Image (cartoon, rainbow over all chains, first blue to last red; front, side):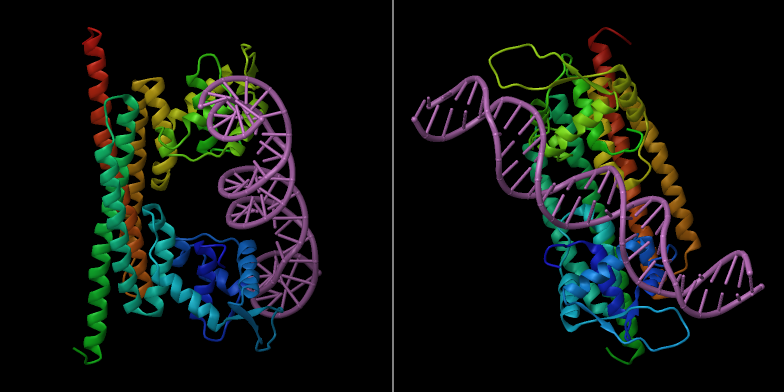
Length: 195
Length: 195
DNA sequence: AAAGCCATGTAAGCTGTTACATGATTTT
DNA sequence: AAAATCATGTAACAGCTTACATGGCTTT
């Protein structure tokens, strides 16, 4: 997995981590169908799904598990390994570097962080916010050092303006998300009689 | 070209359309270098560049042109054909359908529209604005019909909120762009003594 | 018995990345 | 003469899409 930082493979790994007794391709495909929350963010055809399962097995992050028998077609059940859990946790803690990756990769991280541990989701959102603020600052620097005296310069300024606007929008969205996450967290703790 | 709606191939076609006497791969690569306006939006390695030139030739949108001789390494000069110009113009008039395509594909269209005809850029920006407003309205509909009673619903609402925010940011950016384009247009006409 | 769902894949083809091969000309 | 630049590609590989092949089980 060192070779690939793509979200699809981690999404498969994440889905496996949510299924205590392991799961199989067709079952995971149901979780990725349109209508399901992950399906709204990521499209993954059956072919690629089985491909990723094989790769996860080769990487030692998933292992074949015994299938409790029954009257159904034969199927291959996988369970996440300890190495897989560690890789997933590492991935869930690292923010994406570019604003354009918020739409897909960050949302996949967020989905699993929320499912696995609300506190992890808060940490992820906070460090993502910091990363995007760095991106914003460096875009501002680009804008200052560009000149708009010719047509090409005007075009470049519009490009940078778009990126600044999209980045600050993402930061504002992260702020609203953090309010939601922290509210949900304190509500959860309050319901359990904690301060 | 019917098979591909990707911006890279149209970018090559667009660059050819800006060079009256035709151009060759190495020359086009200079226009796509980082630092050049297009290079800030699109990355295109030499291998793909020559590949696209071949495809444009096969599609009848570019044709080999005689190279005025001189003491330099042999090179293949291409010129855009009439069919190529028509395809380019059609492409430059059609807005992108999704907000995520603004960052790359729309910016490439905008670049060539500004170079070829400022009025075309205004038309493109206006119809792109309309398209994004449709996107915005349909996202609002998604948000109304989603419920936030469980964790999955909350996640989905955050996803839709992000898309709403990114889309309205893009619309606002298009408004600012239109002000610039129209100012430049009227300044240009005024300088030529037109109303 | 036919239709449909469960379940796992394969095959072909396109897009794109990285690295390198080849050789000509110009500059130092 | 060596180094840099001009100029065009090829080879290998990675990732993804689309379509289809295969067969078991369940429902009508």
